Amino acid sequence: MKRLIPRIIITVVGTLLIATSFVVKPTAGVDAPFVPRLLAYADRNFSVWFAILAVFSFALGGANLIKSHGMKVAKRRSDWPYSVITLVSFAVVLVIGLLKVGGAPGWQGAVTDAGTAFAWVFEAVYGPLQATLFSLLAFFVVSAAYRSFRLRSLEASILLAAATVILIGRTPLGVVVGDLYPDWLTFLRPDVLSMWILRVPNTAGQRAILNGISLGVVATSLRLILGLDRGGVGGRR
Amino acid sequence: MKDRTDTRLLARLAHLDRRWLYLLLVVALVVTILIEPELPEQPSLFLLPLYDRIEQLPPGATILLSVDYGPGSEPELEPMALAVTRHALARGLPVVFMSLWPEGPSQIAHIVEQVIRIEFPEAVAGQDWAVLGYKAGGEMLINALVQEVAAMYPVDAAGRAISDLAALASIHSLADFALVVSFSGGTPGLKEWILFGGDPTGVPTAGGAKGVGSPEYLAYFPRQLLGLVAGLKGASEYEEALANGHPELGSFPRPAAAGMGPQTVAHTLILLFLVFGNLDIVVRWCRRRIGGDQS
Image (cartoon, rainbow over all chains, first blue to last red; front, side, top):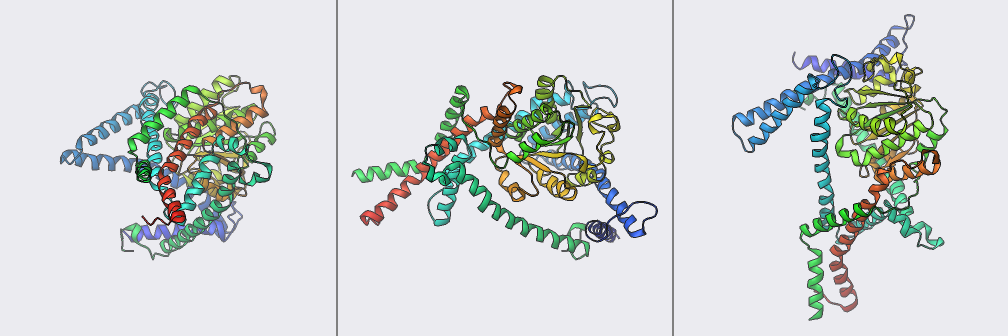
């Protein structure tokens, strides 16, 4: 029963949602036939129900965070002091957010309004921490590019050439360098060439990958709807 | 003897300690930030359809701006969000902000503070602009908006019924917006807006994305994706187009143009390191070809 009910829900919801898009045009209204009316109901309400259910994932995520880091602290596993910081940070932000510390009373105003403690944490702690972390990427990119882009094979050489064109073309340097080219070499300007790389080989590759992924998604969805793939509800695949 | 010295020097250049790379990058970036160079810019063909669309919309047509990023993507995406908001308000188009990301409302607050409060103090909240805020659900939230906006957002972020907001007076579902623009730092973001919002309703959908993420979205350009502001350079191009097209805006802040100097220097430095890294290989290859040296 624990597995049967989720499977029934997946099959019914999946079939109805596919039908709303591909089989019958959903029609609301009392006079409409039963099936189009059912589809209109599903079309209108399933997305809202999903959005409501998605909110509960936050509670689930919070509970999971407390459980996993709590266990780590309790058993004094490696790096457990970091887990203490995680749990304390989680508790502090949760409390000041739920109580809307420093904000307008009751339902008035938002928790993110200027002047609230939550907004201060976002601006003074969360923002700078994320900015610092992402800033470090620049250094890793430089180091990785220096070590990886080597002319060791034809494929690597093509990659290096494309990277060079994009690096120049996607900055104002591309315009400056391009202005030095004679008119008959316009098609080789770094800014023009970089746009060509993005528009033609890149788009062709991206669309091929997208088509492959889409076929995979269709196949997986059908397996789930038909009950052939049971991994998601605790059974064997 | 000299050849051996050259080879050793080239080999050393190809295997520099990474700390030298980091040091050079820091010095180059700090110097460029202090100098603030002004660099030329030309709007690209990915961006122009979005700019032109906003130019052609009749005053009063409402635009939905989805702020789908957090502080990590802020340096690249906020400048374009500021520029598009400024453009819309300069044209008299009401803007409605929402977000698929929990961090979105705080990012929206930045846009409101930096553009609306300072440059358009006469803009009336609820009439010229409105903030719907964040809701969970990602693509299913968009799917729900396709049916009815009020089903997911009965009130705005300030708690006012959206039926009372002039900016949303003519909006029942997503299809009623004149344009949807998603500033996308990842998932959920622009891709979801194209697939679940733009495709089923036909509402023109455009977006802004980080430089590294932009190539992925070009697969949808130009039929499903009206236009794309690609990375900091795209934002800088938008600022340039806006400055040229709307001289009445005066000298507005241009954070993307200011960022292009350091970005250009960083790119140039990477190119220089690529040359260092490959010089050894190229020289050895040339020697083999010319001199028959098999070493």
